[in-house]
Length: 216
Image 1: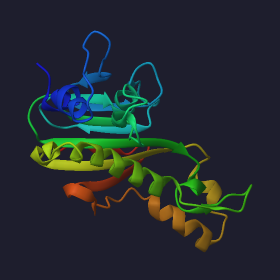
Image 2: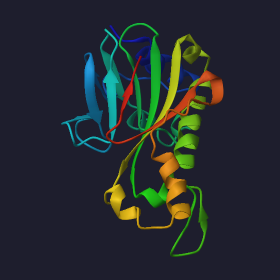
Image 3: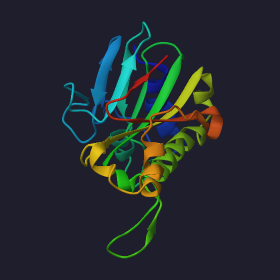
């Protein structure tokens, strides 16, 4: 039996945009995991990765299995239609039964200097940074649901999670820089829960690999 989220993705969402879900040619790419910790990564044949190979670390500390839905893949099914327009986050994570929580998860791999706003060394152009981009990506993804109905309001806990894996060296190499240069990115790398309110009752969280996010 499909979860309520899968029912929404197969029925309500396509119908709203005048599309038809075809079981013989369309598939919601997803994987299921029991209680415990796991790592996920986008752009790979398998969503769940061996320990050490992921970008986002999720600890399902509930008693119910969770499903990880490749939301980007899902939206791309409807390319060239209104249902497939706009930006989308990488994954959505929710329990296979019930409405305890739902997590919209945007993943990125980046050097520290690109997380916060920065100046492009090539063009001198001011860039918003990975963090701000991820927030927009998550909000746009959430709005896709609310353009159809308020189904997401049924979830008790609604989270927009930004997961980042740093690609540059260890923090020690940056300690030789001035305090003012180091302090700004360090604030983002601290992994302190921000609990920043977003749209529709969602809360923004961020984790730098390999810090985990607990579902409950």
